[in-house]
Amino acid sequence: MILEKLGYYWLAFFGIILIRYFLIAGGVYWFFYSDMGKPYIKKNLRSLPPKWKSMRHDIKLAILSAVFFSFCAALILSGYDSGLTRLYSSFTQYGLWYIGFSFVAILILQDGYFYIIHRTFHNPLLFKWLHHGHHRSLEPTPWTSFAFDLPEAIFQGFFFIGIVFLIPLHFITLIALLMTMTIWAVVTHLGIDPFPRSLMRDWLSKWLIGPTHHSIHHRKYRVHYGLYFTFWDKLLGTHDPSYEQEFLD
Image (spheres, helix red, strand yellow):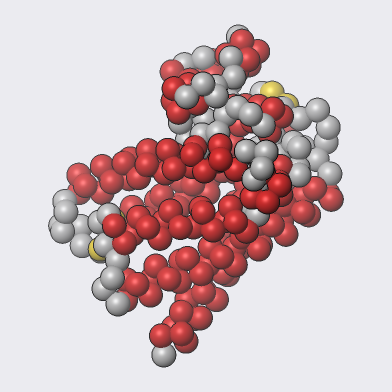
């Protein structure tokens, strides 16, 4: 019975995750890489047009990653059904303030976790086995946003499994975190920058990672390991000064 429920959840979430990926990544790619999106492109970050072979590779990796992510989601929901997780649904259980607080706290915690594993994946001894697939597209497109090698997908998925079993989270918070991660990943892998220079000069662009910041990582590999915020790169010496000098001036 438990295995049947787990299998049902896995199948349902596999469909949801694939639909989410193709709708968001595919929709954003279709918009910005067609004539419709050209007026909104402030800076082209690519030196070459996207190649279908590279995008097809990214899509295959994303589908394989979805297999494991679906298992993680099924495991979390099965754990909730059994009363094993810290997920809750009542807005009054911890108060409305906690929903907002936990959302920001998990973003910061996830960013630190991602920085550590991402920088580790770029170790020359590990890169080929853990992260090379994501970088086969030397210049990313929105399709690259969830193109993970299986070991990387496992590390990514385990973060949320650990969180829901350790920290109280409202279902709304968990959904908001997953959607934020999805949209942020697509935006940072755009391959173009739709944001005006005036916005890039304000404090938000200095502390939040956008497409220009992450495109430097795909070019140079040894810098810019963060997910949402730039402060870990600045604090630990992996922030590329050309981001300010070349792109923000």
